[in-house]
Length: 493
Ligand code: IMP
Image (tube, rainbow, N blue to C red):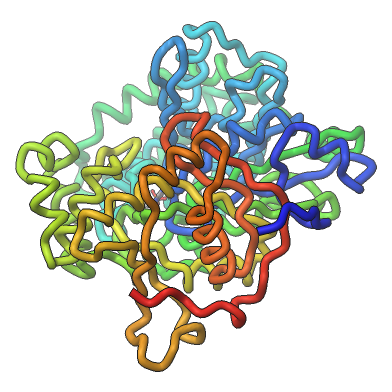
């Protein structure tokens, strides 16, 4: 690996923007390249010092990340991850679906921690509003897909539908703030009509009427953050601001690009940042991808590298219905026994337990898979991703105690030798010593070899490696070119 600089690489320090060839402001887009939960917030936390604005452009309370702070742990769902960097301005674009109750709650939790967002947070008046009937519809129908039950799909569907049975169903945040009593009446009518059409009862009647009761107060608390100027972000960038767009969910869950119907309901691809984030694409500079070395997926849908395949998918689906989470799995199973099993399903269960792969908001056990380099390569090519941060690299060391005795990875068939079918190979693995040195910022030959191997197979440079959960365990890599994959033959396990 060389440290030679290239024109197109990802920011690794706050000084990066000052060397940028772009004279005015610019925007970078950071997206997850797999099925969500790749640790995007951790990367944004590291990159935030280099940006003036951190902006969300899609999704809503279906996203989520837990942040440990000196004042305690906080789970954020809708606020951009830059919230703990006081110099950053935060923007929630018109492409987002706002749950006003949860957003108000996040803001008030932060206030209790001494963080006030007045003057810092701007929310587009055009963002879609999640309403009680959306939440009820999602809870009733979401099981087939395994949605998070936050009403996001019905909310976006109503935005496109606009009117149902002569009633307006697509309220925006600006409508709520402009006339909250009218918005409450509208929401109550749509919810009542839905309940009546279903026989006059709903298991969520009391809960939804509590939400409507609280709405005027919630609306008042969000009023200071409303941004009615559609050109607000563009004006900031024209004046020289640098923006980091933070994608929610991930590219493989995009409503069109993903595998229907097992997708989220918004666009998660980087190009959408400029629609849902309210900025002209002419300001785009770089696309930054985040992936993780132990893959996971929540909900249903294809997952080619899943350990245990369909059995794992079914087990996780049932477990989430039965509310079996981390504590239950830990009391039922022995990690060491599972890890030594010759059954990939058992190895996947052990890895979930060892790497804490349970839903942030829901506690659901996540389906676990080996690193899929073939799939990553496709996503990177399709969306012209400039560089990749790879998280959870330290977790690969657990494989050493498994029957694989190395790290199984799925690679593109083109780069396999004829006798190396099927499309999985076993990489020799990384030792604790290599990882420890890496955390100190010194990459040994084995770690350089690993970086080189991954880059050749995905066709993009790695900008950083996550070698542990702590902030300090993110190791930035200097800009460098990547040799084409054809010149590399994989290590065959
Ligand atoms: P929805 O976004 O709640 O409609 O759920 C649709 C699908 O996207 C389900 O499989 C969810 O589990 C998945 N999903 C939604 N948000 C996230 C996320 O933040 N991380 C991972 N998966 C997500």
